[in-house]
Every structure is written in structure tokens, then in C-alpha cells.
Image 1 (cartoon, rainbow, N blue to C red):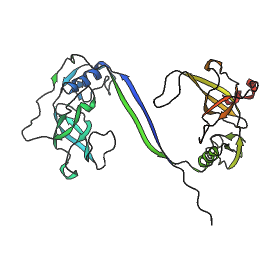
Image 2 (image 1 turned 120 degrees about the vertical axis):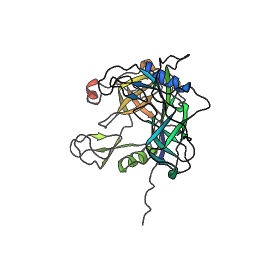
Image 3 (image 1 turned 135 degrees about the vertical axis):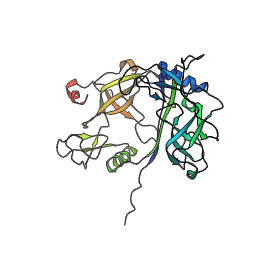
Image 4 (image 1 turned 135 degrees about the horizontal axis):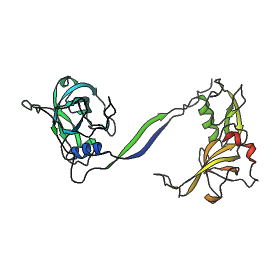
Length: 319
């Protein structure tokens, strides 16, 4: 009896900073949070939207009529979060709540600091707990907390011109996705072959195209692929780009070239970095071969193989 093969899995993180400029309405809203002034915007029909938007969701009319709403509000619905994750508003268990601030007609999503789910209910009165340090972001609201008796709602939202000193004009939001990747049968075979410095794809029994990396099925014909085919190791650059922006945690000097490479025998081009040649000499049709780092489980990069360039007709279908 043979042992079952090890199931491959690996933690993966996709992370990047998302930078965007702000419209006048968004700028006023975030600057207002920095100054502890919650703002909404009034629509043509008289509804007050918080958070404010630039255009009326019903008429598409441009909205600029800013109003100040209350720091207290009412929970319209909620869900308990027993295990807070990285980057969430509170480190201890809390409730996600939709809060309709006093004077608003829509609800704002945020965290409610409560000792347990039994302390949360729809209709409960809450108030903003402001962050000690505020910079013009939704995190300037640290969370919501239960309101004390006697904290009455203001009668009406008050007009506001949206003017503040040193307004916030742009934000940088960190986008991050953490997950564990487990490849299927086809990808597992491909990765195990790479560890042996071989590149193995799978052939479609219908159209005969060899997919590298294999997907387990032909996306064109919709049939399973099981026949394993070793391709390469050499290939042809089909197209490429010159990278001029240095990536975080990537120890490669710019500029460098990232290319689509059609390995010999493959019916699909894969990605790879080109080195061993000046970036401005990389070209379509360049013949390349893989370079493996010591102990590497995949090619570190591809370099010119010294062969004559491939004719365009031999790879034009792989562009």
C-alpha cells in the first residue's frame, strides 16, 4: 500500500495600496470626520444621504447640498463578529451595525463596541466614538458605542458649506487579501514537475492544444484534459512589457522585462521575466531558455538561448 501524495497548499497574500482623488463631496465628508463634523448630502427629493454621494441615485442629478447630521443615531440592523480579523476596527469581538445618524435617511456601516450579542438590538441608540488621532478617513470614527440616556436627536440637519482648512483631497487605502491556495490535480502535477526542473502541460483530446500551466479542462472545448505532455524547456517571446516601477519586496532593479513566452510544444504562452540581455534589446520572436536558481522550484527567469529569432508565423496564434 502506497502513501497518499502530499496535498500541496501555500499561504498567499495579494496586497497593494489603492490611491484615489476625492470629489468635493467626498473631500468635505472625510475632512468633516477629521474635524468631528459628520456630513451628509441632501437630494432633490429632500432625503439626506450619509455617507454622501456625488449624484442622486434616483435622478442622477449632481448633489452639492451638504448638511451636518448628528453624532448619535439608531441601529437599523446588525451582525455579531466573534473573531475580529486583521485590520478591522476593534481587536475584541464586536457587532457590525448599520447606523442611521440623526438627521439622515440612510445608514452608515461601522463597528459597535458591545460586551456581547445580547447587548445589541435593532433600534438601540448609539453615538460616535471618535478616534484620538484623526487624519480624514472613515477610521476617524473609531467605532460606535451605546448612547447614554438623554442624548436626544437634533431636530433637523443643519446646512453646511463644506469648507474646512486644509481639506483632504486624496486617500490611500490598503487593499489586502490573505488566503490559502490548494491546487487541484492538474496544477499539482505541474508544480511537482517544476520542482524536478521539467515543465509539463496537458493536451486537450479534442483540439490537441497543450495547456501550460494545465487547467484540468480545455476552456475552449469544455472537456477534461488528462494526457500529460512535457514542453520546452526553450521557448519564444511572443510579446512583452518593460517594467519601470519597482515592486514592494521584489529585489529586481528596474527597468526589467516581463514577457509572454510560448514554450516549444505548448499551445498557450506563460509569463516569465527576461534577463541576460539589455531590456531595450528584448523583442518578439526572441528565443529563450529557463534559468533556475539553486533550490528553486520554478525558473527564476529566462535568458536568450543563442538561437536565431523565431519567424512571426510560428507564434502569431499565441499572441
